[in-house]
Length: 360
Ligand SMILES: Cc1cc2nc3c(=O)[nH]c(=O)nc-3n(C[C@H](O)[C@H](O)[C@H](O)COP(=O)(O)OP(=O)(O)OC[C@H]3O[C@@H](n4cnc5c(N)ncnc54)[C@H](O)[C@@H]3O)c2cc1C
Image 1 (cartoon, rainbow, N blue to C red):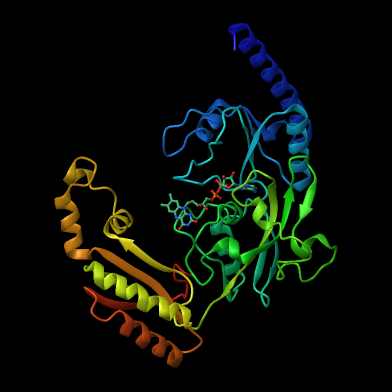
Image 2: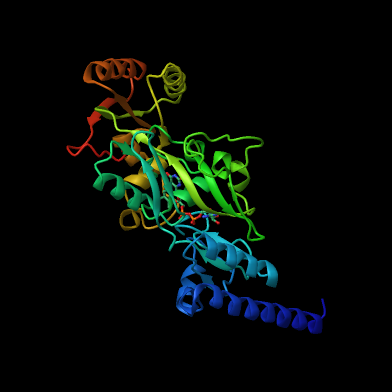
């Protein structure tokens, strides 16, 4: 492209953006079309170096405003990138994959729309965070809990599910435990998945399939629409709950243990997430990088060996839960049998006194 053509294109893009900004101000109110350089710079920052520039930040309040935002973007051919919690740390934070995308920040849409204690589900807007959902259920003395993740509590349920996040608890594969999505397509049209598309369909929050092709997966890790509502299936708190941990030094022993644990997962002894961490992963969770004692990266072998001496080469952790202590004791015995001979024998920790373990 010649220099003159380049200038003409840049001026055309700037003109389209200006027209879109004017229409967005009209649709959202000027306060929710953010051009403040500091706010934009923060949004352009990830945990690694990036070069993408964000020309503006849009903050819609509801689905109708999301529809308006996308219609305007489409009309003026300006790319937009949605974020719900914007805490996608390690994977790009809020930075769009392409340069010049306007950020559609759904954080203001933070309403919990529906909860059913008996059927154990929670329907939320995209801005609802793990912290908020946890506190909300707790305040109401709910017997249910939402799967938690290792990331920020201020990450959103919807952003995490769409990224096919994984968590702790009985429903670790989060996208497997959601349904009834409301989605705004790039044209501004609104669709609902599963039974949710039928007005008044009471089974929509618990029956994923509806009729015909299943659409949910189209909107996960894709740019085919902006999700504005989602239902999450909750887990019931169990009266008996134990977390367990053991450390392994011998790789061959680890392989055998994996097979024994797999058998327990298939026969129902172990439900939900099970973690196998190597020493480096455990090290990074247990403490900050030891710059003071080591002074450089990568971690030198002697420091790794020192950590292994106390910790082992591998850690296995997870949780057991049961409806009563007798049943729990049986599960504990079966698990201890499968992990017999570990470098650091399996230890069971009861949940904290308020019954709210990190899993619950
Ligand atoms: C130390 C650490 C530990 C972590 N542990 C875990 C873990 O255990 N499990 C785990 O899953 N993750 C983990 N993460 C990764 C990250 O924190 C999570 O994936 C987090 O849930 C991101 O959520 P968010 O709401 O901030 O996502 P966002 O940044 O809002 O969005 C994530 C992605 O989904 C898209 N998206 C968001 N909302 C919508 C929408 N409404 N419609 C369409 N597309 C949308 C975005 O464009 C983006 O690509 C960890 C991160 C760190 C730093």
